[in-house]
Picture (cartoon, rainbow, N blue to C red):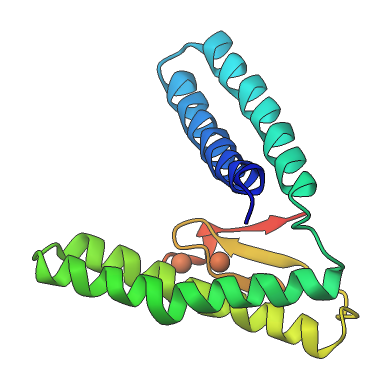
Length: 164
Ligand SMILES: [Fe+2]
Ligand SMILES: [Fe+2]
């Protein structure tokens, strides 16, 4: 990989993180009754998204949708088969039960994401129309309105919201 290609991917990672961080900071500013600062964080977050997307595009990392589904499937699979299980083990070794559960739940949610990507791949991208509902606690995705508590983190059915 050329240095410039490496730089594009490093910049993509950094800008992606800045985007999520600023959105979290915006929520905090709202909580503190500072709506103008919240707005500034949201505006900057949006600008960092533009940067991140430009870096990814210029790095040639956006493929066809079938290629992207395969890439997304492999990323989620890595997360639920290796990354999170290792983090669960590390948290356990350090006696941190709260984070052990957190990583475990998130890993299970990633397995669910992988399953949905696999389903879309199996259908060659022509999946049946359905609304996705996310558990706001762990990120589990349910096809159609949730009718029961989250199967992963046991959050109440009211924790689910629809994604447009
Ligand atoms: Fe995921
Ligand atoms: Fe959940």
